[in-house]
Structure formats: C-alpha cells, structure tokens
Image (cartoon, helix red, strand yellow):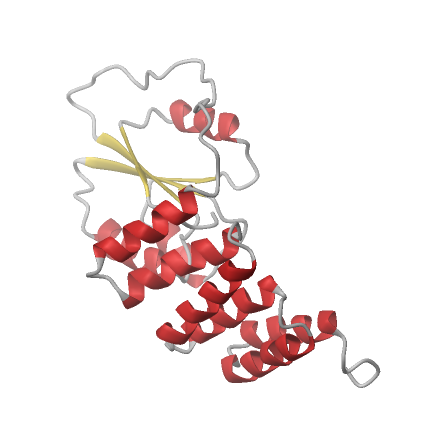
Length: 219
C-alpha cells in the first residue's frame, strides 16, 4: 500500500483480509477507497454490499447490489447476494423476493436439464428389522448456522430407529465438525469427489432417505 496507494488490487486484497479478520468497518473503508478509484467496478459494489450486510446495514447493502446490477444486469454475484439479503431484510415480502428471483432467472437462457447419469437409483432391499439409514449432505458441517442447527437435530434422533450418515462437502473442519462427526454412524468426505462419484458413494451406503441441507450456497 505504501508503494502503490492507488492500486485497486492492493486495496481489494486488503479489504478481503480485513473482512476475514472480522474488521468489517475497516474493510468497508478499503472497498470504498476502491470505488473512489474506479466507481464502475461491479465486484467492488458487490463487496461493499456484502460488508454492509455483515454490519447489518441491510438497506444500504441492497442499494449496493442494485448499483452493481445497474452496471452489469447479469452479475451472478450481485443477483445471488441480493437474494440472500432479501431473506434477512424482507422475510415477509414474498412478491419482492419472487421479482428478484425472476430477474436472476431472466439472465440465463432456458436449457434442457441433463441429469448426471447413474447406474441405478436402487438403494437397499427392504429389511424391516434394521434401522432406517438416514443421510445428510452438507457443506456446512462446521461453525455455520446449518451446522449448529444440525447439532440439535442429530442429538435428538432416535438412534434405535435411525442409522445416521453425514456426507461432508467442505474441505476443512473445526471443533463443531468433530462434534457432529461423533454423533453419526458414518462420516463420508465428498468435497473432492465428482457428482457421479459422490452418488456412487451414497448408494454404496444403502441410504434410505437423503437430506440435502444446501440452498443457494457455495458448497
């Protein structure tokens, strides 16, 4: 920064580091410096919106995403984060969320769905005497809201009735990951697998009921 105070890349990297450190106000100041240098930088407006959301300044965050979309109506990052923020800001405003979803969908031409081919959809033969095999697929088996919710869910399963399996789609873990791992019968990392390989692994476990905890999330 001392050598090149006008460097957009340096300011952006500084903002990213500050955000990871939880220093959101300082990160926001760095992003706003980027925008002073280049006001039409779409990603900087998205980053500003993300930081404003981190600071619970939701109306300002939404305005930042709208600015990004005015510059690039097909910005996936802006559309995605606007939708996420609307769930915090306008949880009871279904029409507004639907309009945002339609605007996002309109950016992409319709294409026929081509599902990943699988050898078989069969799982295991009925065995009335055994426990039901229940699987959870998640990239959030860690310190994440989904991870904390699942902690309570797993604790309250009837282990006499259910055999629990977790399919973790995140490459790393933490203390909560280990806590969740201790509550299931089978722990299966799948972040390095292709869709076809993950499907084969899940079938090999004879899962009866598979729960996908993902929504509009990265993992």
